[in-house]
Structure formats: structure tokens, C-alpha cells
Length: 316
Ligand code: BTN
Image 1 (cartoon, protein in one colour):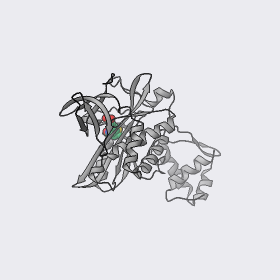
Image 2 (cartoon, protein in one colour):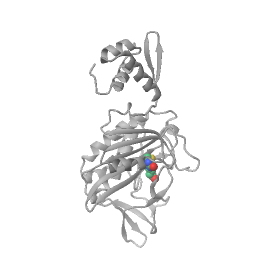
Image 3 (cartoon, protein in one colour):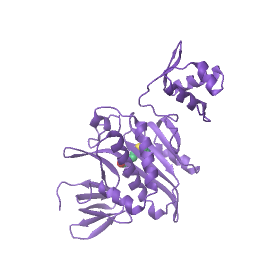
Image 4 (cartoon, protein in one colour):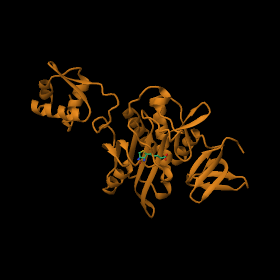
């Protein structure tokens, strides 16, 4: 077996590869003492792994939907995993200020943040994570990150859950159930920049996977409700990060075209709500600099860079 620098990781690999394996054999393969093996096994159990000790050796019981640094060790970002946080955005900010790139994941958030200062309900079973990156983008191109993140999230959900999803401007991932549009996931972007250079970007991603949906958010839905079964969250995370990294290399015009192909907003009559007020009109297109082009009733074409979008039933 090819050893890594992380003994716990190696033990986990051996446990996954063998139905049953003795402490003696693990110790021999990894050239460590049996006491060291025992200590690592104890630690793995503490992290949530169900490991049965039998007279013939250790046996790992399938842990289903476990998320932790070990399970996500193969991601291209350093992973920080927490059982509970206020918001992964808060931890991400501390890490970003130290100049690191990383992925912060939590089982639950007590003060989950949604867009426009809303509360984001984050119970057990969902994917609540923030990705800290230092992109080589100019500030003008920062808008691309939400398009990239929502596309990557949609593509990962489609691949792992096997369902079709759509995008609502600016960055909601939507499932269409009969005629109703239900929100599966949302993206929150925070950027720190100087003049024209991005210092770091924090991309918050919330996906309703195996979690219950609060009755306070009737417009939301989880993958478990759609599929009537639970999914392994790590499969979605791995796919999402892969798509995200790939899309980071794609030209901006192509990103916008991919986004438009999955959009539910374009061609619709919409209401845009933002701090300065509300605007109604036809969502025409996305401009090259990432704005929503809105044709209002007095036939002006407005460029909208931020706000909340409500899809209205009737076309203009
Ligand atoms: C939205 O309003 O649609 C954006 C929701 C973003 C939620 C995610 S969950 C992980 C990260 N931490 C937070 O507090 N918010 C984002």
C-alpha cells in the first residue's frame, strides 16, 4: 500500500479496503505500534466512524453520510469541518484574512446568512459551506464568481441526484415541481478587494440535501423530499468543487452562455427588489458585465446588478 503522510487517513483506507483487518496487520503495513493503531482507531470513532472490534480484527461499518476532514481529504482545498458554527462565512473570513484558500463546512449553523440580510435556515443534513479563494480576477470580473458557483452547484446536483434543475437570477438553484418553482440551493458572495484587485472571495453555498425544510420557508425543497431517499453529501461536494475548478478556467462569455441555457429568469416578467426600490419588467438578457437587462413598461432597458428577483406569472 502507498502510504501518505497522514496515518489516520491510511488506517481509514485499509479499513475501507478490507472487510476485517487486525490491529497487528495494520501496524505491520504502516510500520507503527499496535498502541498507535489503537489510538488512531479511538480517534476515528470519536470523529463518528462506526468501527467494530471483533476477535479477528477491526471492521468499518458503512457510515452513510459522514462529512469530516478525513472523508473530504481528497479535495483540492484544505477542509475545516465543524459540528456547529454561527455561520461558515464568519470562519471563512478569519481564514481568508490569514491569506489561506480553504473550504469550511459545518453540520449546522445557528446564524446562517442568506442574501439581502436574510436568515438562512441550516439544520442537520444540508450542505452548508464557504469556499475561500484568491482568484486572479479583477474586481470588474468578480460578478462571474456567483455565476460560476451557481452553475457548478446546479451541475453537481444534476449529476449526483439525477434530476434537472434550473437557475434563477442572480443565483438560486431551482427545482420545478409541476408548475411550482422550489428553491434547492443558494449562493452568497463576499469579496474583499483593493482598487482593482480581489484580495479574496468567499463563496457561501447552501444546499438542501437530507435536511428538513422549515415551514417558514414554503418556497424551499430538499433533495430528500424530491428523491424520497438520502444522498451522500460528500459526493455532491466533490463534484461541485470539480465543476467549480473547471469553470474557473472557462472564458467569461461561455460561462454566461452556460448560465443562460439553464436560466428560468430570461424571457420572464419579473419584479426586482433592491434597497432603492422595486422595478417590474421583462428579463431580456444578461449583459457582458453580468447585469440583468430589464425592459420596463416604459420600454427603457435597465441594467440591474443586484437585488432579489421574483418571477411573475404573466408575460408582458
Ligand atoms: C441565499 O440567500 O440564497 C444565499 C444562501 C447562502 C447560504 C450559505 S450556507 C453556507 C454559507 N454560510 C452562510 O451563513 N450562508 C452561506
